[in-house]
Length: 206
Image 1 (cartoon, one colour):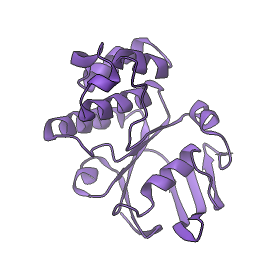
Image 2 (cartoon, one colour):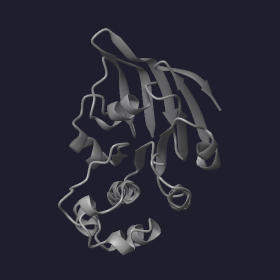
Image 3 (cartoon, one colour):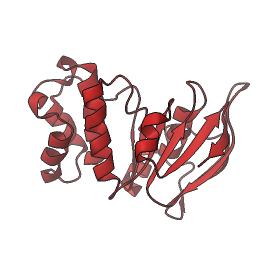
Image 4 (spheres, helix red, strand yellow):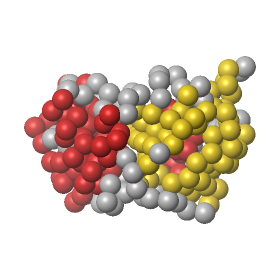
């Protein structure tokens, strides 16, 4: 499904990623590391929001290294950012509908992510935790083959962490995922593979 080959990224003289190589056939891959270790940059490169300084990325046998994010989404790769990107003046329902490939699918997703009580509130009127859930709903409403989830548990209370865990466990049988976190405890409960990234390098796998 996904192949990342010798990917490096520099911002000026700052090396953010160095010779990152891994593959994912299916299932859930957890990537963990401290803040600033390169996790977010790696997901942005896979999804087309950043271009690598060198290296190549393939999805289902097609090279996507220099494709625009819109093209990569059409191929079946969607990303949920750590800092949510939503339409703040639209309602939760309108946000999810805008992302949806099939509108009948949206009610199911919103129910599973505990968004039913805020469906008709504007995104700017709901809590930070609910906004995180909204972005997940928008990502999965695209019906991707591969979902890239950057720190999906950050800023969530214990109740919503459980909501997200159950949702991802259920969807993990249908959709492959790469999930980043700076702690391993939660990742280990859902990931079939784990990678550790430190200083922009993959330093361990399990």
